[in-house]
Image 1: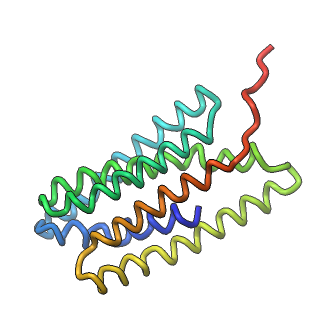
Image 2: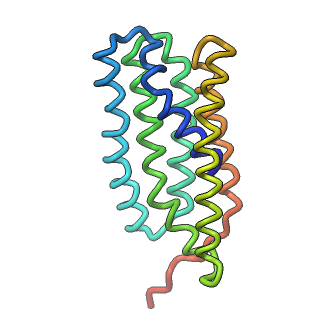
Image 3: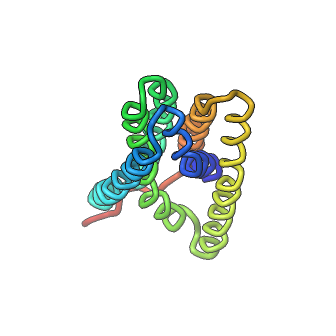
Amino acid sequence: NFGALAAEWGVGFWLPSVVKETGASIGLVGVLTALPYAAGAVTMVLVARSSDRTQERKWHMIAATSASGFFLFVAQFATGFGPYAAVLFLTLSIGAFLGRFGPFWTLPGEVLPPAVAGVGIGLINGAGNLGGTVGPVVFGYVRDTTGRFNAALTAGGVALIGASLLALAIRTPGPPNRS
């Protein structure tokens, strides 16, 4: 959760500046930066429905987080093609990222013993909040150091894919017995 939310908050905090850096006017920046979150609202519902239908959480969360990282990584290359190309990949990234939340937050209750689930959820949330504090600072630092957001988008993509790889270690219970 730390790596994923560091990337998400880094992108979310700096999104208007990333889009403005592609040459968009300030009015267009306002409109274009709303699109990723509209897509995210739809993706949240679709991923949650699929996860509920199949009763599978881990792979839905990993797929959404990995896709978000991949599209964020590609977005760095799209920034050179203008605001519409950049926003397309940022929309795909943020949409996929927001789609991960439903399956993600059902996992602790499924994999942790009931006696420690509350503490586990608190620790997971605390680590995520720390990532949400670090991410925007790192994005800003990388932007100031390099003069562009491309390397920050790469770092965010790597953080998301790394978080996906760490999630592979989660042991989930088998499918429910429906006899």
